[in-house]
Length: 252
Image (cartoon, rainbow, N blue to C red):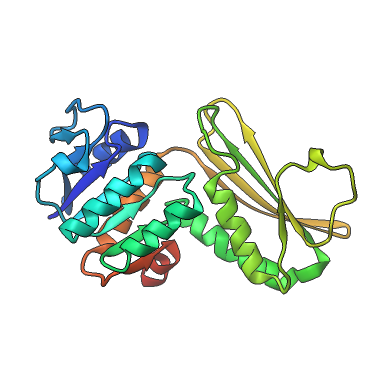
């Protein structure tokens, strides 16, 4: 039985993870980290990792960027893997993850859905095939409570497209800020925030007289919870290093 610590356990995704794990027989939640220390999931909740002495096999972090340093420090000190699902991380945060990954396995993905990972692979392939003949635009839609824009998933998809191109594209987020013709070597990234949209991402390849659109629509947050749990189980027994959904999909 894999013992899991949830960081951000009393947030929306933390509660979803608690529910999903409760239905499984291969893992259990043994503790949680959250500024709200109410224990509603049947396990102890600590305001800070430094207060936790509960033995565990892996940490899943679905909290906020400011919690990352404490989670990584705890993982390194306790020598346990960490699955980082938090979005809106800075370049400095990613450097911290890479440093921690020198000591323990660290899994990071801007989106924990296997479907989104497949979308990224398809976008990479499409960019390699279509090349300079198609303009690329990425549209992402999320609920009105999401803080970061564009989404980490949209940036992940843009990076996948970039890997398939023969040139170095420029990411353009605010087209209204400049009144000029679209540059051939740019990727437009647009964000919509409204209602309770869980997450929708479209990668559009716009050519002469034709448009190819690759899409992923999430109907609930449960798919992200399931992806995080599977990533946690995937990390058990792995050597130190930085892992992502491509590694997981390749191992399936």
